[in-house]
Amino acid sequence: EIVMTQSPATLSVSPGERATLSCRASQSVSSYLAWYQQKPGQAPRLLLYHTSTRATGVPPRFSSSGSETEFTLTISSLQSEDFAVYYCQQYNIWPRTFGQGTKVEIK
Amino acid sequence: QVQLQESGPGLVKPSETLSLTCTVSGASITDYFWSWIRQPPGKQLEWVGYIYYNVRVKYNPSLESRVTLSVDTAKNQFSLNLRSVTAADTAVYYCLRLGVPTSDRYVDDYWGRGTLVTVSS
Image 1 (cartoon, rainbow over the protein chains, first blue to last red):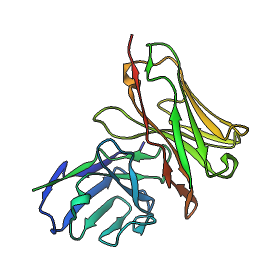
Image 2 (spheres, helix red, strand yellow):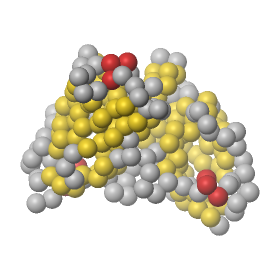
Image 3 (cartoon, rainbow over the protein chains, first blue to last red):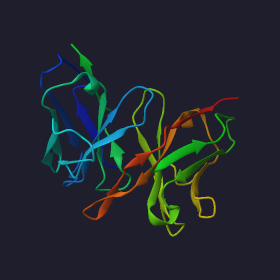
């Protein structure tokens, strides 16, 4: 199966600052890459899919880029509600696989 | 408004079968792909499998020998059965709908709130 590796494990950011999260795939996933946000006690929420398409209701401060094996999620100006764990997921090859997550915490 | 609700025992004994049901409202079970994902405490998310109307089903190879997904169209529900469970199967189990088309794939749009299943004697 494809292994997804996220970095860093934890990112400390001040509100209003920019956050950049990375995701690497062990083999090409083409553009079949999604990003999720998960808050404590909640189900994950789809943010972006097909690398850069925002899901319904996701604000434009969330963006993503990349292809094949290297991807980046950028949150342009962190709001209080953005502090959470973020996962990448490939859905090119079954089984779909998630990264281990990046926790974005308040600095 | 689409809603998904997981139900089933919160505690299962080792070697027994874990059985969960997801009740869907606001959408027809025959019109979409449906899936289960699990998350062991403090660990990453793992796909269990997906199903379309008892016609197409796909399981994670790591679980394929023990898992069965099924759809009950009369009740608008879909179910997960995982046999011969061990402590490693302790997790929050989420049901979800794969309702967003993207190229030739589907991604999720609605999730249940999740249910914690603990495997312990």
